[in-house]
Image 1 (cartoon, rainbow, N blue to C red):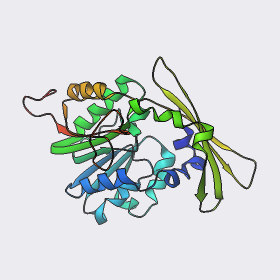
Image 2 (tube, rainbow, N blue to C red):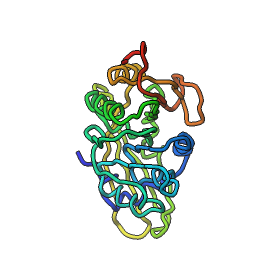
Image 3 (cartoon, rainbow, N blue to C red):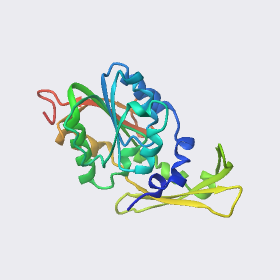
Length: 254
């Protein structure tokens, strides 16, 4: 099912306003300082990839399945020095390797099945250079953040550069059998009667599943974090952040 939040240009224009430069991109940009090559899987509008290309000195490739997101990426400052690839992260094979692979912005959660999550980790393994590192994040299911995505709790105003203040909110439901959360996003500009809407579906994999899938893919976690400030993991921490590398001799997955 195509997600209009990423595929419809009218909705994509709100993406950076709600998901701009923040702790996750700061953390990943710092990791990229020592990397000569970076693969940004699920790069979205290219905010991180374009920022770290370093005047063309660093080889940076951004991969995303949404053409509307990549259209924004190509025209941002630095975007002309990044190679953009329209493809799903589960299937893409570039025939090259990278010092750093990032998959952030909770993009890992759009992979709804264990098979898809396994395929994405295999993509990371296939593109990771010797001595390279990868990082990805997913919301901690134990925190149950989706409970805050109700119309009442999620009411906010987004300041749009041309539309002015835009009222926004979400609504949510969770399938108890699968753990998949379906949430709707609404944008209501002050001028006009049109309300822009999108329906998204995301999964909340557990740390235990991630550990198993990492080992199956030949990857090893070197660090687990509970937030983008580098805090320790825990049942009450908002994030599950994995920083890792190819599994070494004697490690699970090697």
